[in-house]
Length: 507
Image (cartoon, rainbow, N blue to C red):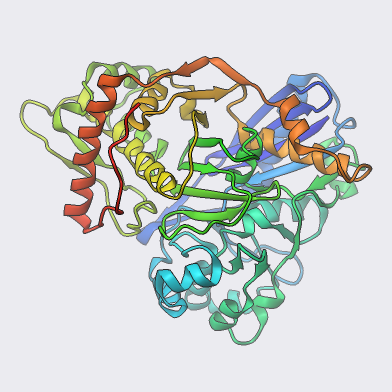
């Protein structure tokens, strides 16, 4: 058995996998709380992650009706880009700044200018650093918390920190490291010069974790922690990775031809590539995968959080919200929501705020508001899909994961808006499943250097054809008009140019 852990923004999920049969034996979850503040501050206490890890693992073992001494390995997925800093004694210096934190947007802009703008960042790192990436958080910490900054001995990402908590070893793997802003995705090496630019003392360079390959183990569980968790003390901890990288493994997106779309707190869209084909579109991040290749990816910062805000405003539960969405026509009778409650990353608008457009006395209804938010967040993903298509990414079908994928109405909206068939995998918690599969791969590689990740994915991942939906021609055309209205509003409000050659799609 192998344990997959997904530590996300809203909570931690645990999944217990029998890698021999491919059967998921048990699952568990526990929630986190967000620290929100002015200027886009989004932080969390890391103690919440470890407490949720314990609770979710216990729940998964209880559901499976097994004891943890049979667990051979653990794979951790974590929210990308977050900053966890430790002192020389391994103590956390301050709450972790998260991927959705835009408080360091001004610092990011200064670092981008130092790199030579978007083109300079692409040439140097293979990605354009964006607000939310780890590197600007370091500069922010130096300027806002100088005394704590001077005590930094280790710089870790969220999943790196959980691996450290499990094993006592500080290391990082290529996929999650790709989103730091101080990593070259082509060579898979740290870019130390940008850290020297932030702090010439060399403190940050010395604090970097060791880089490991995706099939390498971090180590074994600390004995005292194994006892507390009720897990096998000989269980290995695999390299793990960012939630998108683990989601790719958990949907078998490890070969060219697949596209995965995640409908979670954020929205992500990614595809596998065998070579680092760097897109000239800054919004497309060609990260490394956690399976040995690369993962061209776009990420929007607003998805289910925006849906939840409208639900809370109107005091609706999920079922009531979905009923109202169904009552409104495509395009919400001209009501358009730019859902940038957390700023936005795709398009790059870190200081943007949400806004409603096209309201009249006739169309200001609860149904149209619900429809407008669901369409608005999905338009952001359509924009990202246009960018990936421009970069040569093709797929006959989109695989949906995340909490939003469970909503059949949203699945149909995605299919129609993207003019592409949509289907879900059997297990929507793909990041946790990917963590468990990677742990099984890492364990197998210890005795067989040729052990196949693809074979594990084939055995452990299945498509739920009952969730499959096809785009409807009339709806595709109606969404095309609504999408153009959305893009025109973004341009009129923020001056964002539409990337060239984005053409109308047809089913």
